[in-house]
Every structure is written in structure tokens, then in C-alpha cells.
Length: 117
Image (cartoon, rainbow, N blue to C red; front, side, top):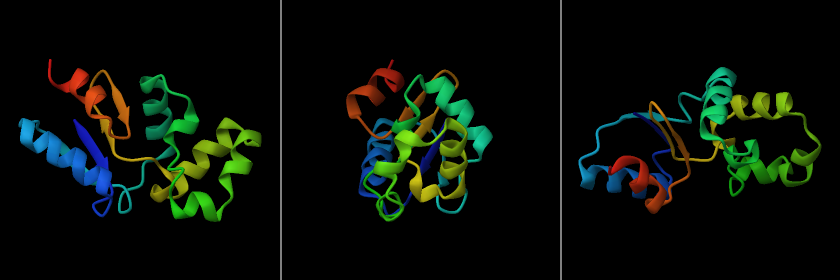
């Protein structure tokens, strides 16, 4: 599994500590150093079954600085993927990518349902 996080993010730290405590094996990737590509994001979006807006880090500084709350509803899907791929700090985290699932953000119950089978 691929765990995409920002090491300074408290939610990412919580998710990582939870997985470590459960003995879950994963590969970690810093989203700021290795931003997901448009192709990655398209694949993960499709696999997740979630609305694309759920991939945006709505509490981030970049999201607010770019006034994306107002702009996203009028942006095309193409523009949204391009924007997400342009800056890892715009992407909601953590992301956990498995063979048959993509989890966006850390919700302990949701993660347990997928990982503790």
C-alpha cells in the first residue's frame, strides 16, 4: 500500500501511528516532495468512487489563498485535476492507496473496515 502524507500534518501523524500500532505495512511518500500526477489523481479518483472535490485540502492555506471555495464549482474536471497536480498542498491527506481501494483523509472506522479484515 502507498501512504501519501505531509509529515508535519497532525492527521497524517495520527493515521501513521494508527497503522504502525496495528502492524500494517506500507510505503510512505511525502506529498510536498512528490506531488501526485494528473494520471495518479485520475486513477485514484476513479478507484475511490468519491466526488473530485473530496480530493481538495479545503483547510489548507493554498486552497484559501486561491479562493477555491468560490472557484471550484465553476471549474471543469480537467482544470481541477490540473490544479491538484500542480501543488501537493492542495490535495487532501493522508491518502492510502491499496489494490482495491483509495482512502482520502483519515477516518479510523473507514480505515479499519479496509485494513483490519
